[in-house]
Amino acid sequence: MSTYWVVVPILGLGTYLIRLSFILLMERIPLPQAAHRMLRFIPASVLPALVLPAVLFGKTGTTPLADPARTGAALVAMLVAWKTRNTLATIGAGMAALWTLQAVL
Image 1 (cartoon, rainbow, N blue to C red):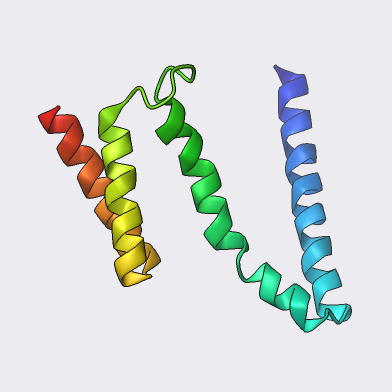
Image 2 (cartoon, one colour):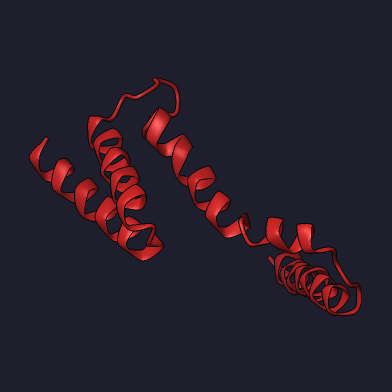
């Protein structure tokens, strides 16, 4: 138990320093405009990467498209994203659709 409380702060400090080093480096190193354009798309690409496995494989993680509520909510979210291009509206519509479909199905 005591080893745990020694390791956790060390890992937290290491994680903080690694993240801080990138922030400090990005301020000092000029990046080309193409790199700045690519970096703007990282948040937009992370969210689908986190959501897609849950949509495709459901709770079991093995059967493709096993959960119709998740698949329907993803379709609603994609439609809202296409029409509004608003991240918060997409997340809100997807969550509302998921809760509604889970209650109905």
